[in-house]
Length: 68
Image (tube, rainbow, N blue to C red):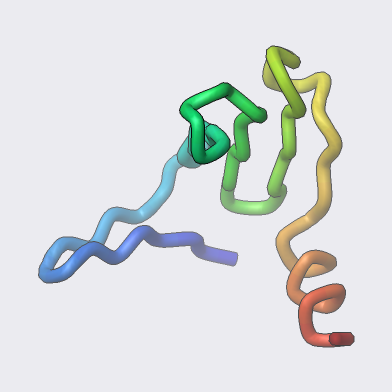
């Protein structure tokens, strides 16, 4: 499976580490991090370190989202 980020005229193919999104609430308070990789998506609530979050395989995430 390939995961890419597309921004206007730029396409970036993700490497093994993927991309890390820092998530904050509307007041700017850190809520957690979302790491999207080639095979897994990992949610790290609060200040949890990479590898200690909740992981879901990308293909499973797609199945979950298609169920709704």
